[in-house]
Amino acid sequence: MSEQHNAEILSESTKKKNFIYEIIDEDLKTNKWNGNVQTRFPPEPNGYLHIGHAKSICLNYGIARDFKGKFNLRFDDTNPSKEEQEYVDSIIEDVKWLGAEFEDRLFFASDYFEQMYQFAVELIKKGKTYVCDLNADEIRATRGTLTEPGTDCADRNRSVEENLDLFKRMRSGEFKNGEKTLRAKIDMTSPNINMRDPIMYRIVHEDHQRQGNKWCIYPTYDWAHGLEDSLEKITHSICTLEFENHRPLYDWFLNELGVYHPQQIEFARLNLNYTVMSKRKLLQLVKENYVDGWDDPRMPTISGLRRRGYSSEALRDFAETVGVAKRDAQTDISLLEFSIRNDLNKRAQRAMAVLRPLKIVLTNYPEDKVEELEAINNPEDALMGKRNIPFSRELFIEQTDFMGNPPKGFHRLVPGGEVRLRYAYIIKCDEVVKNEDGEVVELRCSFDPETKSGTGTSAKKVKGTIHWVSAKQAVPVEVRLYDRLFTIENPTSDENWLNFLNPHSLEIITDALVEPSLRDAKIGEHIQFERNGYFCVDPKFSTQEKLVFNRTVTLKDSWTSKK
Ligand code: ATP
Ligand code: MG
Figure 1: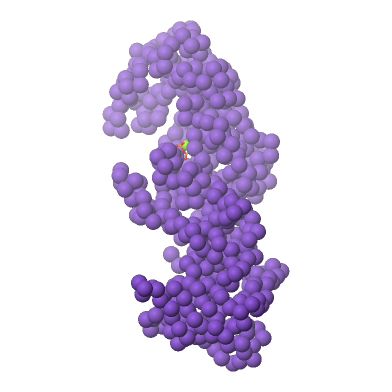
Figure 2 (figure 1 turned 30 degrees about the vertical axis):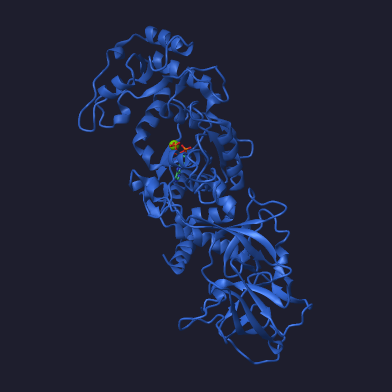
């Protein structure tokens, strides 16, 4: 996908209203919700959030913001065996970082357990649910298939009194895990399998991270979710397409109870190529140490992207750019990179850093002289000002900016050739020093004092400009370069998806050099290493002694595009 193409999507999408906005526009016209708009983001705290969640957060929060409504953060903490406080904390941090304001509207589904229980009792009294003695296998076996109807279970005919009694005893802990369930009495022959007497409660003798041992029956997603939405007076319950077939059930529960009834609206989930997005797979990558935690900069998690140097602005821009669709599709990861480049180009301070240094000695430059040369902090933003960088007799340039036997069209340094050092002088390569293995270890060059950037009197022009650092003042740092986590576009299409992990997804350069202005670079700052990409200080591995920089993204356009 070309940058031009992306730019077009970008400018289009900001003008475009998606189908959910159209629904809400209409609701406002008909005053369906008395002018209210209330959305929510309902994560299950069983993992860290990923960029797909970011899209859902931006969509839900964006709607609340644009329609002057409210946005809730609600944990769908209904399954104690997979949920942890660490996940709750990370999710809150990520949602806040994305800028999705939930103010005091932080809710937990588990706080509604008592109300849900009472709602279930109400449905029992209406004869709409029953306690079932079948175990999980038996329920599966009697549910039928897409082509065959299911069969009624004998417990379906239990009296209201018996159901009330059994349900109470389920709650009080009389039965073992899996011994009984509470099921909705709908229709075992329904063409929609979700409507074939779905389970509402399971017995799980496990402590809940917020409720302790108060409960041993836990509600299923289908039963709980609509109630959570209803209790919070959500107007538009936005979820991903896999819940489309669950909507009749969502509606059934709320209709039978006759309570406040939000509208469920489905949209296509975000899929990105060259990565995985299922929480189960991300958890496996973490647990089996394929990556360095949930916030590894190669992970598609919000915390990973943040550590990698993505800004929340860029993620919000990306969410807007991909838009909201009704059909599943895969989004090219280059679109995400486009958003981050676009953002960092405007805000990142420029600096010079040499990733793989090659020494240069300017033989005609005085031994002890240090010149301060003026450099522009950001050509996109004059307000970011200027800085000085030291220049001296011994410098380092990038190894790849010199070639002994250059191909045609190589405009950087070659034996006997000339090149401009950014913000400094034109230099000429007079001599190439090699070690006994024949490797180039040093270039002896001369500089032309008449060619100083900005002030030089010489009309001399050269085709290439390269970056450099001054040997004595440069600061040694570690640099981490990232590549795609997987080698194929669609790793989950193969059950052996781990075989497609990219062995070169992380490259660590321990002896890079940066200009001295970066000595005090702070966590959270975005810096463009000219010609090398956008970087940030790694919050985990950086120490007082040695800074560690992550490359956020490579550069597409740079001032040295003529190679
Ligand atoms: P699981 O249910 O397997 O734990 P999940 O990714 O659906 O995984 P949830 O915590 O249930 O996790 O998701 C919270 C919300 O984020 C849901 O409303 C869900 O629809 C939405 N969501 C999850 N993945 C994506 C995605 N890839 N794109 C857009 N929205 C997503
Ligand atoms: Mg889910």
